[in-house]
Every structure is written in C-alpha cells, then in structure tokens.
Image (cartoon, rainbow, N blue to C red; front, side):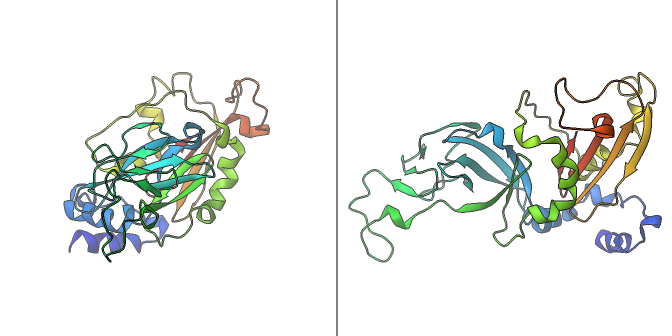
Length: 284
C-alpha cells in the first residue's frame, strides 16, 4: 500500500477512530511535492500585516514554496487606493525587483531600470522608444503590467493565493472570524519580528502548535510554573479551512492589556489557539 493509499484510508475514518498519520507523510519527498502542487499552489498563505504597510509605497516581499522545490517571490505593496500583490520579477528579463521590506516611490528593476507604478503598470524602460512590440507596433508601456496575485486582508493579516481561480478567503473563515474578530486585530501593530527556521516538516509545526495536551508536561517550567488555573477547555470541531480551541482561566488577573476594554466577561481570561489551513497559526 502506498503512502497515498494510507492517507486516503486515514481520511475515511470517523473522528472517533482518528490516528496519527503514517510517518511517510512527514518524510516523503513524493508527498511534499504533491502538497506543494495541490495545497500551497492553490490555497491562501499569510505574508504580511496591514499595519506594516500603512503608507503609499510601503512594501513587503515573501517567498512562497512551489512544486519542484523552488520558491516564487511575491511583493505586496500599498498603492494610493489599496494593497496589491505581484510577482516580484521584472517582466523584461526576470530580475528580482525588491527585497525585504521598505518604501519605494516606484518599483525599479535593478538590472535594466524598467520602472513600474504601485498598481503594477509599466512606466517605461530606458532606450525603449525605438523598440517594437511582438506584433510590430511601437513599444508601448501601457501594454505591459506586472502579473498580479490574488490578495485578501483578514483581521489585519495579508493573505495571497497563487491560484487565480481560488475561492475567496473571507467567506471560508466566517466562523473563525466570530472568535478572532473579538480581539480587533486590524488595529494591532508589530512590536517584534523574529524568523525561526526548523529542519522539519511543515505539518509538524501546525500540529504541535494546536496540541495543548503537551503543555502541562513539556512547558511545566514556563506556562505551568504557577500551576493549573484552567476552568475550561473548549474544543471547536472546526472546518476543512480552520480550527481553534479556547482555554479559559479560572482565576487570576485579566490576560488583556491594561486599558483594553474591548473584551468582556470570560473572554478577558481566555486564550485562543487558531489555525487556518494550510500553515497559518495564531495565539490570542
């Protein structure tokens, strides 16, 4: 039986009989290639925060995994009217346009200085006035545009999708929005940014994050140092697109920041752990 046959059999089990995925699901290059082609190339991935892209010209770059083991570079940039996402390569000779994050009055290719507006339209290229289009017409910047990538904003998080035909993200997260929306995250600002890279399979990160069962043992010197004050743990069944669970503290001070009165009742003592398929996780 192939690993894919095992996964199909696993997926057909009722919830009560769920078991650990076969080990090959975490180590097989064949499985990873299938995930890159069928999951990451077609689903929504978080790449930035709107609070970091407030001013016209603010941008952030992201490298997204693609089938075959490569990466596709994307840039999200704030224009006069909205945020947009584009392939981060010049349409002339394929040079990478921007790196990291920052602010640019225009997007200028570092190779041949072709320049683009924030909406992706081409301003022009040096010495191109005597050139012609493929059909013989005079070269016209108006005929050229950076390839745009689907973008949606959810609770201040910027998501992109490499599939131009992908279904909108917002309606799929409506149930989760009822929980996360309570925290008014669209107004949050970044105070610390840290990048960690682990030599492991992406599914293990998500599974471990959503596993609260291990906390009392593995984190007994940190989270568990003051004992167990849990009044209730609420496990939501979730959907194919998202899942979450909530831990409600029985006593002690509020978990909310001083002066923050947006949460009421038990929500002021509630920790939320949420995941959006395939790889976005958040703790509130």
